[in-house]
Length: 245
Length: 293
Ligand SMILES: Nc1ncnc2c1ncn2[C@@H]1O[C@H](COP(=O)(O)OP(=O)(O)O)[C@@H](O)[C@H]1O
Ligand SMILES: [Mg+2]
Image (cartoon, rainbow over all chains, first blue to last red; front, side, top):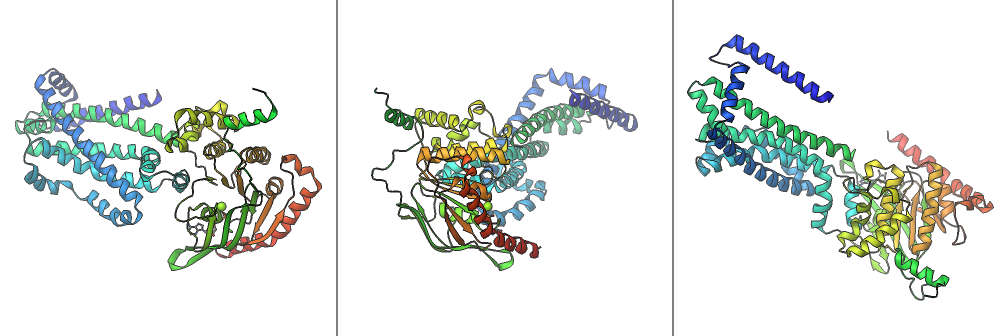
């Protein structure tokens, strides 16, 4: 309840700052919260908006699936195999800090315009943090769990499925949280520069036609959905960490 | 159904985790044997840590053997190499006549010094864990798990998660998880280290009961001299690192015994003998860690 109240206060402060910026910059740059909300309601009532919405979130879904499965596999292998983990960790970290936008021309050449390029762009943003978190999670699993697994005669597969993954899940959800934000970012950037569909395209299109209220309304709706999903993951994250503690 | 005592004992065994005693089972039969076992760990900056040995040790089938020694002397290392969890640098280890090499032989159960209960499983799923992985059929899993839960006094906690339990209760879960696998050799590494003195005495009684009931060979590692004196048939005293066995003490207790044996005259004699042997080693161990800091 307390937390809910704090969030409300935080949201109110954000809206106040927004209103202030609007007064400062004027209609041409920043639409007022009221106008933006009105436009958002109009968008929510239009079928074409929902088409773009679905496009973005299905691209996000695919990209996230690839990022999570790929990242977890890479992280598990590197985490369980100490030597390759030591070799790969600095490489992963530098890949993580590499601005992925520099890979964009390459991805366009490989995948062309459209869905697969967006998915690929989203996935390359998400896969590395998921891999890094998974590897970290596996490496911090208590050695006594591995010993227990050996005494109980577990096969390699059973070890991974029934000890390593469950033990790593709280950390995996943390990785997923970071991975989710970055994957969404990747998908949107992809849509902005190489697509005729999706919310990223809507934003770019609105900027192109100087339709500031639409641009801001799309960003607002996007932010709301992202915050909700993020909050859900954070809740899960806290719960899982709580149970282990 | 004649309902005789013998029948009831057999029925009890059928329900529980006890194995049928081997026909012609001879108490003096060697169950596990370490010969010239040494363990050297690679240390920091190219050096090495000589943690254990050389150790020669024979465990007789069905005996209760304890190891006492100052902390850091290599007790856990001894357990690890005997269980096949880490390879000895030198020497050989036999369990039931077969070389222990590279893997833990089936038939050995281990209760570790650290809490090894899985926080993502309930108490009963923790206990069933090993059996399920081994593909034991569900009815048998239920039977053995219920029995172990009753035996270890965990009835009220079967659906609880380890985070909701005290350290002692969690250690009971780990003991139960080991028991249901029906190991013939049970290794315990300071299992009651975290418990208060009174609870430790009671857990000691449970351990004796379990030992009698299962007929297993037990090797208990402990730093508590009274615990060793009270529970064991035989006690090995380890030197400061590198740990070697410097004494072998027989208690001559009857098989039917419990913590009240502490009132016996010879209990005091054994405990003080242990302390006499350990005092110098403990000083050495403390001195070593003092100078290395
Ligand atoms: N994996 C390891 N690598 C390096 N040194 C170790 C390792 N495990 C234990 N040691 C060292 O070996 C010695 C004996 O450790 P241990 O067997 O755990 O002693 P105890 O159980 O008697 O307290 C200690 O000095 C410890 O630091
Ligand atoms: Mg130890």
